[in-house]
Image (cartoon, rainbow, N blue to C red; front, top):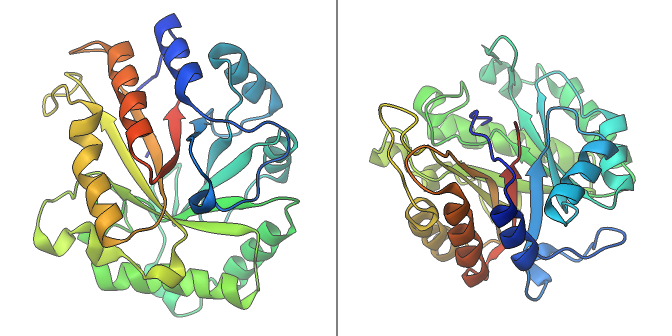
Length: 291
């Protein structure tokens, strides 16, 4: 979820990221993330339609080219081939966050219609377009379902229907024999509301449907009446252990950033990088680098 927290570039932050992240230059390494030894791949959200110039700017600012570049695509639309090709041509890996709604108007998609086959042609066309890309992508479908802010969240449609939808869409990709997409099951760091029926594991569609687990979390600091300053470990530590112990798939921190109000943001980022280095199952992370 693009939550409006900005990550300002500071000299301290740049030095920290440059010192700890891992990026292998040249063409993207096709070795599965869970098979790699050591290091952690950096990624960024650079805007709704990032182009090569945005990647160059990130590399200039941080001293590293992002391995992952995240984009968002809403329902009945497709990834922009110009954007995807720019990302791939820069030897980066796209993470496509595919959202079953109309993002601009926040109009929900009829989940029952998806399950009844009403969008099969669109899903198949999406799958074929993904399969035609000249490189592999990660597909993050219907993320943060254990929050209550999206129309596909379990709080609104129930865990059973969410899992059915996720499996239904991926089964179509499998039927189309798409082999260019890795599937990211992406959760919020906390269950909202924090009740047993909304536990993140209730939404897990099964090992055959998931290649990576994404975790999203933000330190809102004191920017909101309901928020307080929280360390990176306080946000991610507990859920990371649960994901490793209960699922065992490689992990990507798919969204994270920190506000400035309430504490030292550069120190927060430094602690985050130090912590990520200690977590062997975290294979990459995505900074929300928006201004």
